[in-house]
Length: 51
Image (cartoon, rainbow, N blue to C red; front, side, top):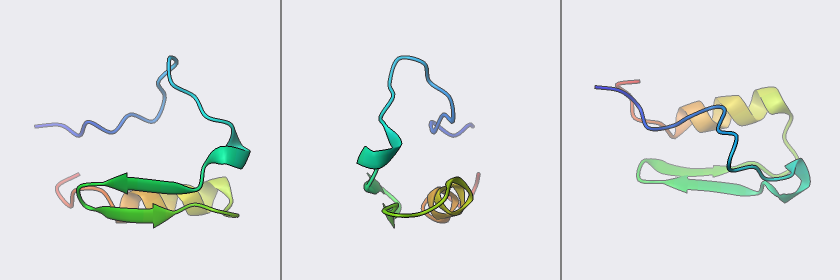
């Protein structure tokens, strides 16, 4: 079993000023105005608890 969230995927990028909201089946993360560290924490909060 492994997570399908990838931290580095070269074919899909988005500029930092356009990342606002992340939505998946486990929740929603509001990323507006957050630092990189805060964004990582917000993404971890909405991932499957098994990972």
